[in-house]
Length: 361
Ligand SMILES: [Zn+2]
Image 1 (tube, rainbow, N blue to C red):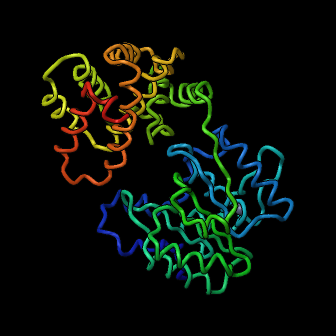
Image 2: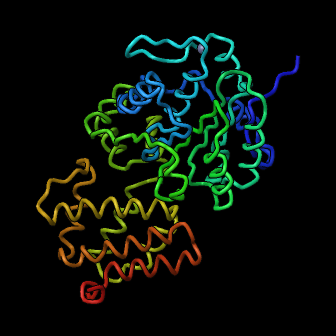
Image 3: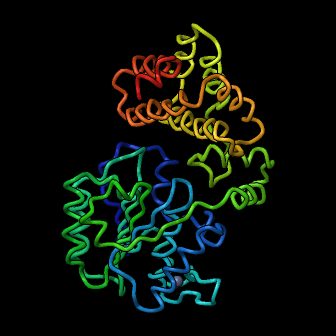
């Protein structure tokens, strides 16, 4: 018997993938993945969702917001699974989809006709108006069960016309429909959309919670877990250390601020890195330099502290205050690399410019 596959809107237009990627794309509900119960910081938004559901107050649109790596998609997936399940576990504190009923089986097989997925397929792929059109069409079809769910990962990927299309659907949602969205940057969503959806925010867990979690779950040494927490990398949740070498760009920055005539080698070193990662990293270090200049305790792990001390000691507080603007501009331009080398040259020259405080006064 032929079954309708869970639609993955826009997936058919994606570039050809290898077998492993295909498998990953076919399994949007990995059984072995880390779930809400495994991440203590998801408990509060999950409880709020359950409470809304119990009181029959679930809105048509829910937006899960949270920093990258905190499990927004995991939370949204489990909410969808729970709502679609025919016999969910409702024991207080252990609420979840049963995983066994017909609906759960369809979902796990990726063939549930009432789930529409707009999850990230490749790196930062935009959501087009065609993707939203397909979504709208699917919402006009007859439902299999009592509820149809659209799951939109990183809704800020919608371009303007896609957002306008979705807005029409949100303004007059078909009965029995739920739009679950996640976003790292809810401020990038049009206010017309934000005003029609309810927000569930994932608060950033405190350092101790995360470090404990990483050491227990992945057997990392405390020092490694603290480094991961400090870097705040996307891959936080799978316990893998950052794929880039944080030491070389940091040492290059120290050299730049403490020695003269070192701009070129520093620019060469920084060129080897993804600009967005570099910009975020320099900004993260800057926060610690300012803490030090303001007499606040540093949050940096012990292995990074000597670098912070050298950076802080190399320039005055007024200089470092102005560096913020230089780094911010670099961060904002990092996603539009027009002239990589020129931007890095400018950054390096600005960072060491003794007239920076006066120039940006
Ligand atoms: Zn079930």
